[in-house]
Amino acid sequence: MNVSAKPILVIGGGIAGMTAAAEAAEVGYRVILVEKEAYLGGRIIRMHRYFPKMCPPTCGFEINTRRIRQNSRIAVYTFTTVEEITGKAGNFVVKVKKHPKYVTGQKPLDDSITEHITSERDNDFNYGMNKTKALYQPHDMAYPRGYVLDRDVLSDSDAETLVKICPEGAIDFEMQEEEIEINVGAVIIATGWRPYDANKLDNLGYGQFPNVITNVMMERLAAKSGPTGGEIIRPSDGKKAENVAFVHCAGSRDENHLPYCSAVCCMASLKQVRYLREKNENARATVFYIDIRTVGSEEKFYYDLLEDDKISFIKGKVAGISEDSGNLILDVEDTINREKLHNKFDMAVLATGMVPNTADLKIPFELKYDMYGFIDRSANIEGIYAVGCAKGPCDVSRAVKESTAATLKAIQCLGGGD
Ligand SMILES: Cc1cc2nc3c(=O)[nH]c(=O)nc-3n(C[C@H](O)[C@H](O)[C@H](O)COP(=O)(O)OP(=O)(O)OC[C@H]3O[C@@H](n4cnc5c(N)ncnc54)[C@H](O)[C@@H]3O)c2cc1C
Image (tube, rainbow, N blue to C red; front, top):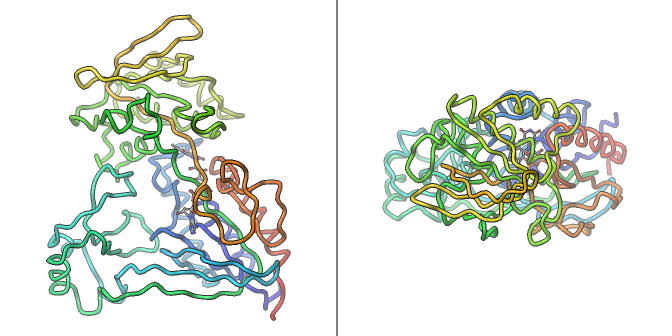
C-alpha cells in the first residue's frame, strides 16, 4: 500500500457506496463518502426485510455502519452534493457542497423539544405516508444520528419556540452552505435509483384511489418502524388488507414508461406477498404478472409460494384499475385461460421499476449515460467507476460485488503524494 496515496471519493451512501468505502478503508486507503441525504443506507434501509434471506436491513446495515464508524480513514459527509469534478485518474479536484442542517450537533436535542412545535413536513423516509415535525430525526436507525431542521416549513412562531427551549448553540438559523475542495485519486459513483413515478400510470389509479400503493410504500407499511407500526392496512380506512392484488411490471417493459426490466421487482413483489401472508393468515394475494423473473436460487422462493392455496398467480397485464365503494376493480386479461377478469380487491400494490438518480441529477464530469440515464457500462474512464444501481437495476448481492471490484480498480489508479 502507498501510504501517501490520495483518498478515494465515493458518491452515494447506499449499500453500494458503503461497501466500497469500507472495503477501501479496510485495506488502508482513505475515503471520502458523500451522501446527499442526512443519513447513509440508501433505499435498502427503508425495506422491511430483504431477499433472499428475508433478514431485516438492520443486520447488514449495522455491520456496515460499524465498519465505517470504527474506521478513522473514512470521512462521511451527509447532506452533501458534488458540484464539480476536474482532473484525471490519480488526481481529481472535486468541489462538494455541504447543505445546512441548521443543527450544530454540539448540544443534545431530544423528542421532548419537537413536541413543542407544530410545523410539519412530509416524511420522505416513509414515502409521504405520514409527517414528521420540522425538527426531525430521519429515522430510528439513522447514521450519523442527529436532528435536521427543515427551515422551509418552520413557522415563525415555531422558530421563536426553538430559540426559547433548545440549549444555547444547538440550533444555528444562520448556518450557510459550505463549499469544500478536495483532491482525490479515484471516484466511485454509487448514486443508485429512485422509484418510477406511479402518477404517470394513468390507468392504474395511483394518486386517485388511496388503496392503490406502490411496492416501496408496501415496504414501509410492513416495517415496524413504518407509518402503521408494521400493520398492512388500507390507507383509505385503516382496515386490515385481506385481499391484495400485486401488479407486476407497473410501467416496466412498457415503451410509454420504462422499456427495460428492473430485475428485482418480481422478487420484491413475491417477498411482499410473504409479508402479507405472514402477518395475516386469512389474507389472500393475487399476483398479476407477465413472466416471473426469479433467477438461480430465487426460483425456490417462487415455488414455495405456489404451494400456498391463498396465493393465486394470474398471467396477464393489468389494463386498468377503477374503484367501487372503496374497493378496487382490476381489469385484466388472463392470457392462459383466455378470460377477461374484473376482480375486486381491498388494495393493489404496483411493482414500479427503478429510475437512475442520474436520469436528472448528472455527475458533474463528462460521462456517458445510456438512453435511460444509467451510467453506460461500456464507457471506460480510468479513475471513475460506477457501481450498483447507478449502472443498472440490480439486487444487493450484485451491488456489493460490483462495489468490491470497483474498489480494487480505484486503488490501482491512486497516485502517491503530489
Ligand atoms: C420494492 C423493492 C424492493 C427491493 N427489495 C430488495 C431485497 O429485498 N433484496 C435485494 O437484494 N434488493 C432489493 N431491492 C433492490 C435494492 O433496493 C438495490 O439493489 C439497492 O438499493 C442498490 O443499492 P445502491 O447503493 O446501488 O443504490 P441506493 O440504495 O439507491 O443508494 C444510492 C445512494 O446514493 C445517494 N445519492 C444519489 N445521488 C447522489 C448524489 N448526486 N450525491 C450524493 N449522494 C447521492 C442516495 O441518496 C442513496 O443514499 C429492491 C428494490 C425494490 C424496487
